[in-house]
Image (cartoon, rainbow, N blue to C red; front, side):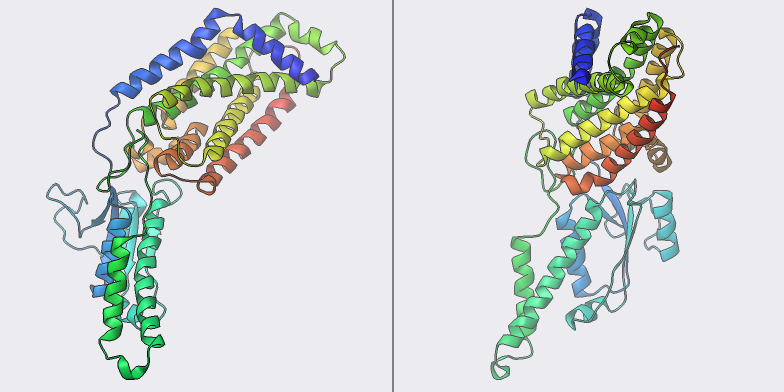
Length: 412
């Protein structure tokens, strides 16, 4: 109860300041709307995936066609290269294994698919065969590429299994040599009518165009991006308030009351955490008004919001022990906010920056939050798809809280 009373009192003092309300409401709403309008929706991004097909048989051709249907944003290089050389082949018409692996390592391609020799014959004979898949899964290549590969393989395997079952259940006297092939062809046709696919949902709230990838522009970028940035600013602003309380001896007087150190810290943490989630709510309300599709797993979305806000709160307490006055706190808040937000993809999608910058960007907790929002809102992901970012943010929170609480002092 005492923790809650301290938090409510801090929130009340925050709300009576009109300047704080401007920073909480007017500026975030204005910037979210402006960026949402002027960030171009533009042409959806395409995904460069290298292909080495040692088989070139009928089944491998069906697999590649199924892969294109499972995710139409995938461009198989060099097979699907265009006159503008989207695949960056520089005149080459084929790829070697080492060359393709180097392209993946350098981020020129997000994944490599290598189909082994004899793939078609082995699949038809129901013999075990493996397709090689290499990607920068950790940062650059989202798991939906792998999901599309698995969906395509499911279609191929399903057609083969259907042909074998069809031949097995009928007496041998009425099954000719071409019967399994006819069953296989018909099964493949049925897959075409109801294909397995990776379900993309446009953040603009419209049904996805089967010929395009998700659009990363407009309010789909500005709402989670500005929500994350201003939540970070709002929570970090608590550093200045805490320094001011120490300077005015407000915090020291609280320490003389019948409350424990844990209760005092808990109340301060809860108040900043509450302001951060409130800031998110203000910005995400713009998304509701503009009709953004927030995905199908709202529980996962809320968990991302809460975990990221907790990380910001922990960062605030970890840095607060080093500050001596409000001017220092304001400077650190602006420096961190204006660095971590763009670095983590709050201003523009990380898909637009070079691969090494995507890696560097994940130093910022904003990047892990934006990865989660992209997965949930654009790729129709679920909780299991954002577990890694959530665990990373939770780990950051634990480490920063441990450091910050240990260094906490009542005096400057």
